[in-house]
Length: 177
Image (cartoon, rainbow, N blue to C red; front, side, top):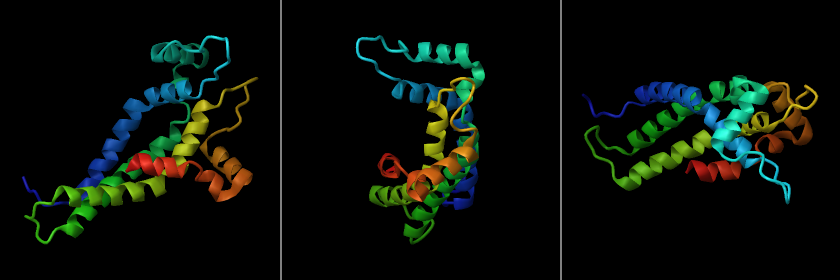
């Protein structure tokens, strides 16, 4: 097996890894976001006792589809983002090698990771914001604030322009490093 760095193989591996992450992990992400954003009314018990209770509450009120609410954006954004991330990481490593056999130092690998994290954050932040907004919206009277990812993007832009779409990017950037 060749040890030569292949950004093309990294790209393909990243893409399929991204698909697997979305399909397997999205219900847990929805539960996490619901718990993080649940209203806390002083003197009242929390709406959910734990993750299991939250998941069952979602299924009971919204069916299993509620666990996957807002998943279209991650399926479009995350596989290419992981592909870009892995590709950029591979390129970052390859740029620092003097020969294909050269072993990189931990600091060189760290720099390649920083490059990959920076590029991926710039690409993924709007999708992350839209995903979270779609996950936390509660349908009242059968009408949701956002009718889907494109509607959410349009409304965000109308409310505050490109800065509103990229709101929270600094925190996402720090997390990505």
